[in-house]
Length: 361
Ligand SMILES: *[C@@H]1O[C@H](CO)[C@@H](O)[C@H](O)[C@H]1NC(C)=O
Ligand SMILES: *[C@@H]1O[C@H](CO)[C@@H](O)[C@H](O)[C@H]1NC(C)=O
Ligand SMILES: *[C@@H]1O[C@H](CO)[C@@H](O)[C@H](O)[C@H]1NC(C)=O
Image (cartoon, rainbow, N blue to C red; front, top):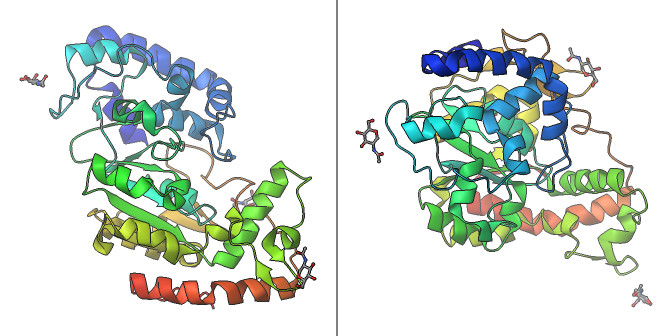
């Protein structure tokens, strides 16, 4: 992080330097402001994470999401055609970037974490963005599902700036179950690399329900929602908590457009047991040197979750917030058995499609 700050400040023109230093020191005083702007309950926000304040601001600097969420169509963004020189700067860009001094240009993502909800996508994004060659949008843009009509330039304007050779990434877990998403991503760039974090569909469903319940305590019980007719053991596959876990079904849509070699599957279970191992494979897939390794992680036994060790320049470790790894509601064991039974054939189909046994049975 320290070196990134250096990169950001050093190459700026003298005129802007004092202003930058001023803005930067101001930003430290305004971490709370950043925090509230970042986690402003914006519709495209996922569940906020309890990151330390400096991290919130770091997210701001990286993603510039606060500014965009306030003025998504602010003038000067759309027509700033990227100039892909090494520094990516141009006179026009300098004017545009008075509030965003980082050099580089905004580019469409080369890799997208497309799913799945409650699979561990936030963890993968936070872990991979430790890599210096990766720049990621901190929030979920929901471009290929909810905001497609806003166009690619709008989408690009959300992205953090990158230097040549850096990989722009975003994550929006609902893409995986959005019928139009594969075609739309393909038409943006057919070489886009796709990452899917998958997890036992039964625990995924319960985790999904637990999250919904925490926002809407009045919803019916899991057992009620899971069945069309419980006496008959008829699972309601149209309930999103259950439908999302039918991975084989959704994957078929993606394989109409992308070869399997362009899709990398992360095991949500392995990610918790062996984050460095799973992240090693993600880095290989992205063509990156394995820089995120064992050294970056420690396991928080209380949370039962791996955390990133603190960056040198900060005082607090980066750990996923309260909402992650929250205790699941208790579900009747016979319902769990019926769900396992329901998913069994879909899981086997999925293992065959991807050529990997995730051992969920
Ligand atoms: C990009 O910048 C370089 C160097 O300043 C310049 O030669 C080139 O014409 C610029 N290209 C565009 C598309 O603006
Ligand atoms: C469930 O199926 C049983 C047996 O067919 C039927 O008697 C019952 O009315 C059904 N319940 C509902 C809620 O549809
Ligand atoms: C581990 O997680 C617990 C519960 O969220 C938290 O209170 C504690 O500070 C964490 N410990 C470390 C070393 O991160």
